[in-house]
Length: 226
Picture 1 (cartoon, rainbow, N blue to C red):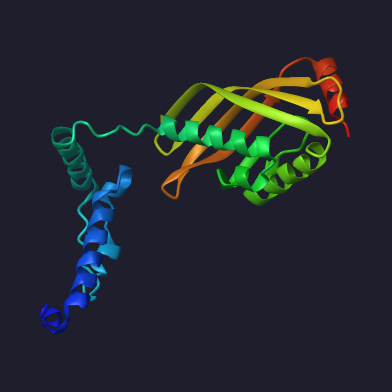
Picture 2 (cartoon, helix red, strand yellow):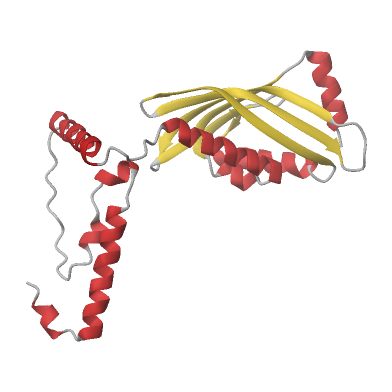
């Protein structure tokens, strides 16, 4: 089956060896759930290209195999880093924080599910990723030319339930007129419901509320009017 190797010169053999080594390294360096996916890219390095006949066991047997595999990692690689879902939530929180402070609507959109629904103060419900990005872009267009704005998110509770999870916490934002004047401090609460998608987590439902009574919120809105 490998007679083609007999006709390769030294340079071609070295090229094949390097391709194989790189593929093996990529396979070796997988982490998380990628450890147990099938790897057609690795198989495609072979000159023969038949479609693999994959036999899939029934769910109970399949899941028992996953458990045995995870147990073997516990024995053989006990020092492996444990990846917890809330580490992903923390990364999302930091990315959104950075994108908001930079006025990057598309950066925020990166972590939104396509069917996201956003509920924010003083605005109708926003449905869909594209609509949410458009709303955020317009908000930034009105806010950033006139104000220096900085926001920080603090999580108080995270949980995961199957393919869904949530991140609940508070935020604090400082908004100061670029031409000088008194800075306004806004505080409030957030609840993000996240859903697993494309091998990661995306914000599926987004709820935001501001602290303070009606009079205080009206005063804050007046200070931010442009």
